[in-house]
Image (cartoon, rainbow, N blue to C red; front, top):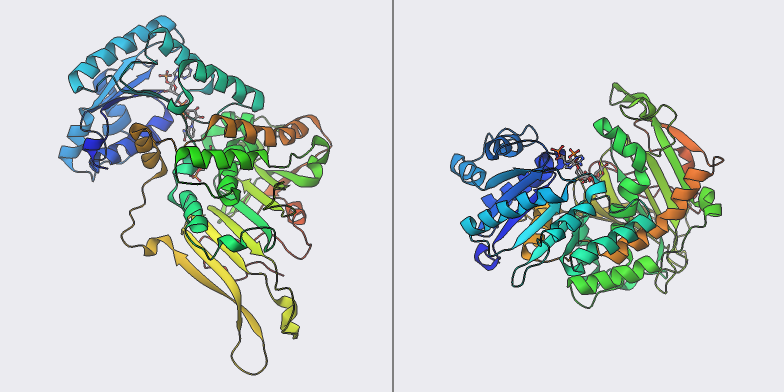
Length: 510
Ligand SMILES: NC(=O)C1=CN([C@@H]2O[C@H](COP(=O)(O)OP(=O)(O)OC[C@H]3O[C@@H](n4cnc5c(N)ncnc54)[C@H](OP(=O)(O)O)[C@@H]3O)[C@@H](O)[C@H]2O)C=CC1
Ligand SMILES: O=C1O[C@H](COP(=O)(O)O)[C@@H](O)[C@H](O)[C@H]1O
């Protein structure tokens, strides 16, 4: 699709003076502009309370943005892009002030000939997510015959299933469901999308993709960083809300859903929705058995002493918020009956890595009855989402020489080997899709509610049941040791993912 095929638009960011705007949104939109992927008629209007002029905003968000280095960018491109940025200060809590947004939009719409098409991106504190659409509606900005009006909502989408349901209800009063874009940046990652292609574009994997051949599935999302200056936010959230309910459950959906009839948004969303409905709820009374929570403690990491979670700025010294969560669960449907899924995520773990490891059953009959046979590993398919994106398949091969000694070997593919592949940043892809009106990579309202329903008993048990321990783990370790015991049978444990996909050759240690 060329820029000419994309309808013109004014892209409005609420929360334009904030961190996300400078860290992700402006860099992504600039890159789209540089690659000539934006419509020819385009303008960006930033809105928040800070009293900034258009020029102040251009400086803060783009020309002098310490989170986005433009020193090597072509001067004409930078200059041309800066001219598309505008700013309107308002009191975001006062409905009357939205008249200022309306008159500014009328002016930009006339000047840039954007045909009355507006995208409203809410990058504000979540308390405003239901207020801003109501204020837009009060000023007639939510609907316009012959033009599109879209709403993008940042995470977190709700705090539990009830608040997510209420938010869905409130948003759909003002915008139709197909114009509501709930962003989950993991869905914008090429390698998350590639999970679907790996499964459904190859006949070699799909026949094995079920309870008959898969012993268990592991999903790991690890980060070496701590909570940094986000302690206040994080302590209200924890690993379950911050990563598992949204990003990791979307990965589960990609791994486990049935084949959609087409790659359309409706078809994919329908399959995801079915999958989320098949998750077996974990009863509050069973949370201690199926879930492990942990909190990082001060320790030396890569030669440097780092603070414990409770010493971080904005975190209460008695906090019980989890910085690590591991959960075992089942999917009650035909394909996955009896196959355990294990997810773990945490901060201050040894490395930055997100991956899925599918462990296959052993062959039904042992032919090679040697001592080595005891150590014969399961076949494993590792789908690496980041970094060193790619696939690794491990299987047994004969060791040259007499007898039938079997050795585990790996066959790997690295995304970087696709020389022509220019992997776009997740926000770039997602923002462009929204501008083009393609919601495929955005979360649907009912999926969000279902995934909240799944995590809710865990959240409740962790909040209410003091007998469930929060295990301390030293920063730089792989989390509480007890998380190893979640995985059965006992001789199998978590895969040890190194930064490089093929660095680790132990695969599933037996
Ligand atoms: N930063 C990140 O990396 C990520 C952020 N998010 C989500 O994006 C949203 C924005 O995050 P982030 O940019 O980090 O937050 P910030 O606190 O840095 O920015 C919030 C923005 O909202 C504006 N704002 C408007 N009205 C209000 C109000 N009534 N109270 C407070 N602020 C207001 C603030 O500007 P002003 O004071 O001028 O009005 C500011 O521009 C959040 O919901 C967050 O969860 C999601 C993923 C990652
Ligand atoms: O949404 C979030 O994601 C990041 C991790 O994103 P990634 O793309 O770097 O894997 C996480 O650090 C943050 O706590 C969370 O809010």
